[in-house]
Amino acid sequence: MKSILALIRLELQMELRRKYALGGALLYVLSTVFVIYSSLQDAKELPWNALFWLVALFIAVNAVAKSFAIEQDGTQLYLYQLASGIHIIMAKIIYNVLLVMLLLSLSTVAFLLFLAIPILHMGLFFCTIALGSLSLGIVLSFISAIANKTDSSAVFTAILGFPVLLPILLSLIKLTEASFSEEMLPVSHDIIILLAIDTILLGLILILFPIVWKD
Amino acid sequence: MKRNWWKYLGAALVLYAIIVGISRPLNPGILQIDPIALEAGQTYDLNIATYNTNFTNGSDVDAFIKINDTFGIQSQSVVILEHNELKASFVIPEKLPSILQRERYSIILSADGLGTFIRPSALSIVQKEIDLNGAIAAWPSNDFGKFKRADRAQFPFRAILYESLRNLFYHVPMWFGMTFLLLGSLVSSVLYLKDNNIERDMMASSMIKVAVLYGILGCATGAIWARGTWGTWWTFQEIKLNVSAATLLLYFAYFLLRAAIDDEILKAKISSVYSIIGFVAAVFLLFVLPRMVGDSLHPGNGGNPGFGGEDLDSTLRTVFYPAVIGWTLLGFWLAQLSYRSEILQDYFLEKFD
Image (cartoon, rainbow over all chains, first blue to last red; front, side):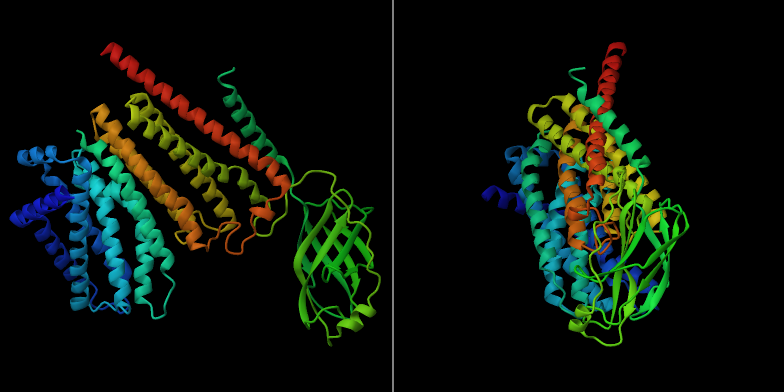
């Protein structure tokens, strides 16, 4: 447990020092919101669901992909050889989940402020963001670990990640659709499915990551 | 022969499924009835157009209108017009044993050699006053004897599907085969990660290769069927089509991943790990999501006539189960051939390099 916390603190320090991921992601949030604002001025009924999740996916994939790209540094490799594989991936997952949650909340705020997104059930929406960042964080962390072994890791994170994310995305989209609608739609089924798939994938990842890491 | 018996069995079963699946005729069916809106207390000459029948002037055909499980009306006379058209005259009693004023009733035809066939809820009959007891008391004879049986094996006649239900033997086994092949590749990948035998990884990749082939063929057979039944080659409204496409995307990404890594051992490890994660996602996509969504255009879901449970006719089962087994065995044979050719390629590359 201590080593996991130490590793998380390490990630945070690296991030604060270079500000690659956070700065880049903030830029993505603001630029996508700006593009949407300026190009869809006249449209009355915007497809909020689609817009939000497109932006969210874009930001999440780029943010998480960057966190693994810093591996090439020699000092990092030494530190990582001291810690066990499971601790490393747990630390990365926790860090990425929190990062994605921060970014998704920021993009929600941007959508609310600049685009007046009509969210009717705030509680459900934030619950969805929390679940979504959990799922996106878990899956994308592992996929970037795999994709990092190829030459063009950013491309592969997207290629490999998207089909695995698809069932998760479908449930998330249903949940946000429910938070836009006026009536109380039954969503417990989707939430359970999301939690189930997260648990299964997390378990598998904890088993499989040390194998990937041995190289 | 001892080691390869399953290959011959697979080939034989597929051949059987193809031949019998295409050649066995459909049950006769009722296509059109004219008129279909009747009134109680009148006499009608119903012109009935049928499908897959071979009536001649001397054919013994009976026609019935089924009111409910206890009561029915037999036709007064049946005149054969063409090999697939006849005229049946009915006398509808004043009062019907029904509590509704207007209701839809089924029509049944029973012919020698062809068997008995029904069109459910085909006729709508209106009665002026509702008198259940009076109707039951005044009902003419209800004893129709036995319905005639068909003297040949035939597939059920289903509305909307008609002849296209033969697709059941080619389209559905593709997906069964793909699932079994993906299961096999999962086992192979896990075994590779356990004992690092590169041949297991080759087997896994061969199985996924054939699984993707089966998936593409499944989509193709589905598209041909859909063109006939739904009127379009593809639609994005149907969940099963979307998740099949997503699963194929997932395994295309698997091959991209293999192509991007040069070192053989790293390639094997990374692709095995991805295929395990991908399998979980594929299971969710193919089996969990369609059941969650529920509404589907495929037969058997959302009010369409289907094949599952009590719908799957025994005559269909006699071809469907062998087809599934046969196509699956054929798939594993293909995977084994691909695996063997890969091993040979590696062997010759090493020898002559």
